[in-house]
Length: 295
Ligand SMILES: Cc1cc2nc3c(=O)[nH]c(=O)nc-3n(C[C@H](O)[C@H](O)[C@H](O)COP(=O)(O)O)c2cc1C
Image 1 (cartoon, rainbow, N blue to C red):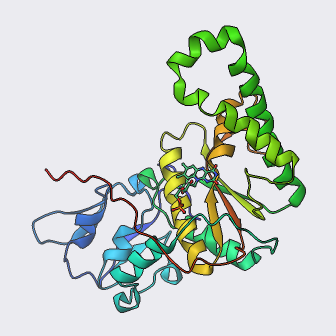
Image 2 (cartoon, rainbow, N blue to C red):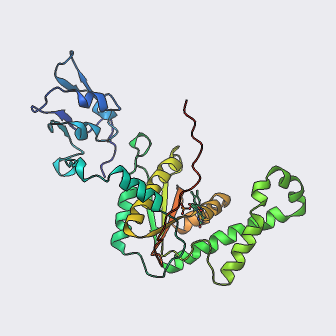
């Protein structure tokens, strides 16, 4: 991927002879890089070092007049709007997508995993920072370690919360947290009996992470995660959001899982479990619609 350039070495951006002065680039650029000297006059490029590499100028130009060093011709594709999914098709995909936890041991083909990650990587990021990274775990021993790590952190949390001295003042303050104490115990029991209710038998885990200092790590990662999820559904791959694992990561001040994955300086902000389902659901259901306030 192209990366940001310094002020001393900005991207080469130019408006070529083909320009019809429609001004689309001026209107869509979030960094005001394009402008006119006079109304309806020629388009000029100003302060290209402010470019955030969103590519809107190139994508919006109807005549291919914007020349951007980061987006050479092979990276620019005409859009065939007739080939897009219809609203009804998207609505159906959204209704059909479920976190199917009945997983088989069949691995997800690597080509599909790559496609799922590529779909995630299409998601928008704040200021087009594109600082997300993806760590794909398919190694069975590492998958097991992730599940066991989660149970271990939960075990420690359970012991702490069950301490009578802590319990007496914390329980009234955090009743929601205390609801999970029996859940932790059940998860551990199930695992010991061969039922992994953390990973649910997933054969792949996709960790989505960003630099610790990225203020929009969670937003960026979760948008990417949903892209991945929808792509997985179209491929017939099951996907489950790994909230338990994320909770364990957040409760572990030693950041052991980050270290196990070589992500010491990153924040893991979304995790998706992937696996081949034993079966596909023959039905979708309607859920209670959320309240919508129109002002
Ligand atoms: C933030 C978040 C955390 C979740 N964590 C888990 C989890 O740890 N384990 C699990 O089996 N499902 C988890 N889920 C899946 C939800 O339970 C599931 O999305 C919800 O029940 C609705 O079902 P659906 O995804 O099939 O539509 C999580 C979902 C979200 C959005």
